[in-house]
Length: 388
Image 1 (cartoon, rainbow, N blue to C red):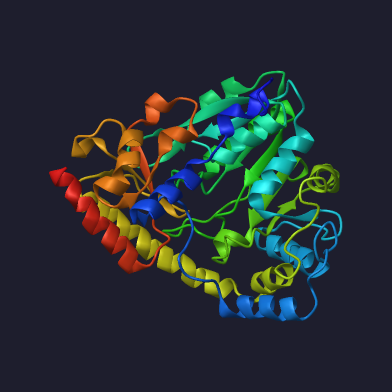
Image 2: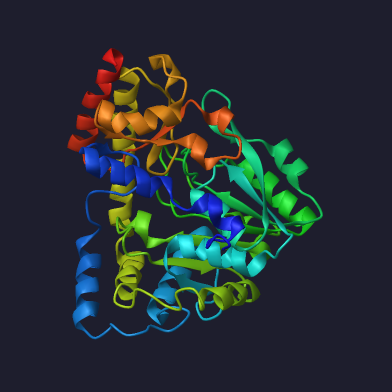
């Protein structure tokens, strides 16, 4: 009998996040592996969800999303100087993960190539495979102070079969935020070769040190070829709600909607009005979240450094990356699987997010989106590595 899972999906039978979280739960480890906060979002948003839940908003919402949420999303994009028609250029999805998968299923065909910047979020590779396309990767490289895009490698990666490029900034897992020069280079490549850019912007509000997020769609020639994706999960501490969205020209939204309608059709009926409320009324809360996360980043980075790691600066997201070699370890993946039982902390090896694992074999990713006492407990436990 043939294997039940199609060959192109056999490398994706599980995610490192599910496995590491299960290991952390089983061992009682502090879970700094999976990127989710341990506090709730703004009270006004939660109240709006309760009101919608008990107010009858529990049946199928409209296929493109509830009108008030699409209007709020379109209004939110104007902060970048971008105007989208909420009726034709905005689509609500089941989180950013579905938005990415639906975009690639719609836009990439068998034999097409999709460029991913590595390390890449793990769903990117799976979504490319589901579309039947082929993945080509372009690396980020460490210049000692940040992870920078290899622009020459990006230009060299384009072939006549290239259809799209996946861009994640602020970047998970490294915490880098692409510079103006890097974004300009990406835009020039897309325009020159008539590529679609699928930009994952879920951490758009979570940047630090006065660094601001710039959507690719704001660059010359890019609005008409960019599928911009974001979500409420990271912005409003509600990762379990899975309310995301796509903003793009009408023809691209129509293409993505064609696949999305046969995936989840719709979801989150009573949560959509709450996200509309949050986008309209709670951005001051988000600014406080950004300031708090900046402090948590510093807290964890110092703690990791004091514990013996070498830590790269993080300009955004929930994450910092650390080099395990100063502690005498050479294989970060092996260490990640041992850490929960060794010292009671869970982290994620960055090599699992790349096609070139040997080049990232020494890097662990830690999440700082936790309460201060949780971060402090993790750091205290990690100090035991000196004696391991």
